[in-house]
Image 1 (cartoon, rainbow, N blue to C red):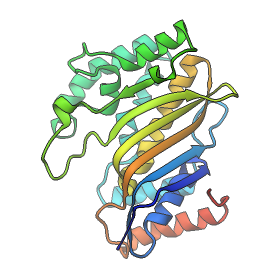
Image 2: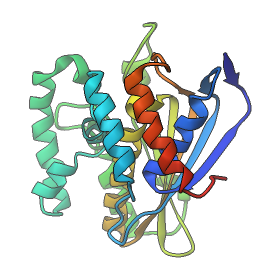
Image 3: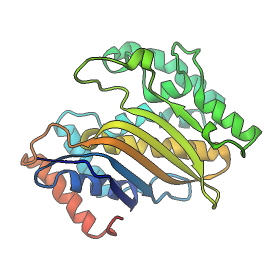
Length: 266
């Protein structure tokens, strides 16, 4: 069993390829976790959406469905609810209000998963109840007011010690601690996300998809282009699974075949 204590940097173009390279390292014989992991993803299209490899995505979605895990879209929704943004037709204020109202119903329908909130809810309604502090709106309004100056302004937190410090052995939420935003010299937005731990196989892809969509939204509102997503993980884990399971091996066969045609990561 390998538990790496040396920093591991993986940089790749395209969300699917980047995730696939992390999974390839993590599922090597004897390896159970990477600690710490820095994943840097580039490769966003002209509209700011992450480039995906449809074969890898389909293979993962199939495995998640077979094993009864939450799908990529479901996980991504917790970080950025894309369908509400589309319903609001790009109207920022309407988008935020629509989600605030909807989340109270979402919480009632699924209290087990949403009892403490969700990531996007913490970002726009930190205290909860539909009247909490909207961190994203503050960042966007402040950027519109004065885009230069102190760069530490551009950050938002999902972790609340008053609600989240716990002695429970397993806590699903929140693993994402914080997101921050910085800017490149080419008018690009760079999103940084910080995780204490991350389940790479069942949640990693959906996490990166949601973070990429969040970045696209913020870049659009700032008049920038989404350029890079950096994910810092204290402990990247391979989940509790059997690496010899036929369904898992079938998924890995697809991923390895696609990675052979992709550039070797840094």
